[in-house]
Amino acid sequence: MFLFSEKVDLFMDKLTLLYSRQAIAERVRALAEAINSDYADKELVLVGILRGTFVFLADLIRLIKVPVTVDFIGVSSYGLGTESSQQIALTKDVQIPVTGKHVLVVEDILDTGLTVDFVLRSLRQRQPASLRVCALIDKKERRLIDVPVDYVGFDLKSGFVAGYGIDCAERYRSLPDIYLVESVER
Ligand code: XMP
Ligand code: MG
Image (cartoon, rainbow, N blue to C red; front, top):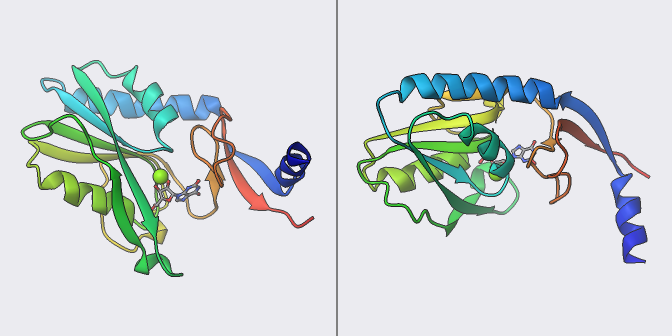
C-alpha cells in the first residue's frame, strides 16, 4: 500500500528537462576554472549548505587544483506564510575553524537570498580572510535581500527545479540532470 501510494505520488509531478548532465558538467568546469585562477596562490575552504549541494560540491571539488578542504553547514527555515517572514536557524555548524581562511560558500539555488545571507553573517563573525559565494543556480529576480554572489552556474528566471542533488519534497535528488518540476493534478 505504501509503495503503491509512493508510485502514484510520483506521477503527480511533471518533470521537464532543464539542464542536461552535459550542460551542468560544462558550467561546473567553467566555475572551477574561475575559482582555480582566483585562488591560485591560496588555500581554500569550501563550505556547502546542506543538503542540496552535495552532488554539485562533489563534482566541483574534483576540479579544484588549489589546496582545498571541505565542510558543510546546515540551516533550516521556518515561518508563517510569506517568504520574507521566514526565520532561519543553524542546524549544523562547520567543524573546520574558518578564522583567517579563504572561504567559499557553495549553494545549490540562490533564491530570496535569506539562506545565504544568514550563512554569510554567521561565517563573517569568525573573521575569515575572505568570504565568497558560488551558486549553481541563481534566481536573482526573486531576491528579497541583496547578497553578493561571485560564481554562478545558471541564471533562472522562474520555476521550481529538482535533480542533481536538489530535491522537491526530498525526491529526485538522485537524478543526474536538472528538471523543472510542475505539480500535475490527478
Ligand atoms: P533562499 O535564497 O530563498 O533559498 O533562502 C532557500 C532554499 O530554497 C531552496 N530552493 C529550492 N529548492 N527547488 C528546490 O528544490 C527550487 O526551485 C528551489 N528554489 C529555492 C534552495 O535549496 C535554498 O537553499
Ligand atoms: Mg538548500
